[in-house]
Image 1 (cartoon, helix red, strand yellow):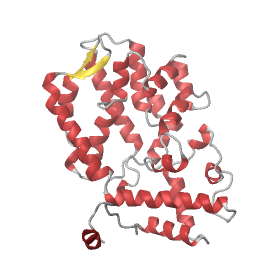
Image 2 (cartoon, helix red, strand yellow):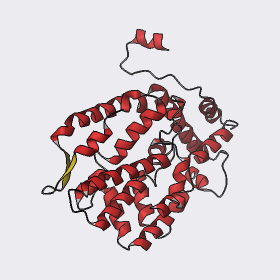
Image 3 (cartoon, rainbow, N blue to C red):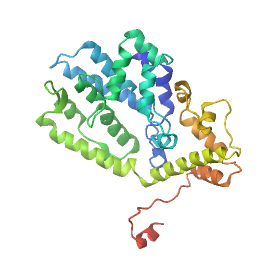
Image 4 (cartoon, one colour):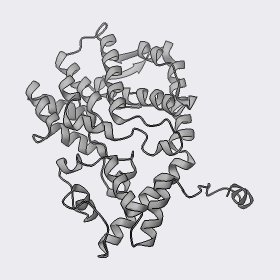
Length: 310
């Protein structure tokens, strides 16, 4: 596991912020996908340790489940899910490719431990692994990914909406061996209700915050404008010979090229585009860099309220 953490692909997560543009609203939201992934790994280890006291868990399945929790975000793109929408990709697909590839350090490390391990880890991430109960700990409505990011994001933003009783949920988790699924024993129902409320309020107050959504809209508009200007044959500054050049050309990236790109690449190019000859691209880029964002209003907001808000 330490070798996986030290791998090139996992270290890249240090350069991808967990909350994307959340720091535009919450100044403390500087934490990375790296720290979140370590947190998910810690939680899966705790849950599996507890399960081992009650259930017979195959040691190889335990290794695969821990590795999957650790690596579940290695294929993630920049700025949360903004780039997925603009460039039309899903980070889960890239994660599976990183795990299975013979070109990646992670793929080689998993294969050196066991030839069957990459496929096991990939199937857990894809949700096709058996026993399904172990895969549900990594990806479900009550998994270590969500358990970690709610508490971590709540702490780093200063918003108290994401707090719930993690210890009680871990204590109450159990496996229905006949149906091959996880469930929560009766004593943990209130803790899970608190967890669900935490998710609801974090989405309302943090993940869907007006300023955050406005920043995401500006960044999406910047990338789309750059793509359009480049497609029309006008000059758009870019680092030639890089993965970013292929992005502007609408060319598919190889796995190594995808893994070359992180938050800093987009920030660097947006800073250069402030001086673009294209007025729209220049204006949007300046707005983004200087945090002079557009106001966000609800579409169903009455006209008088909307004027007052603006």
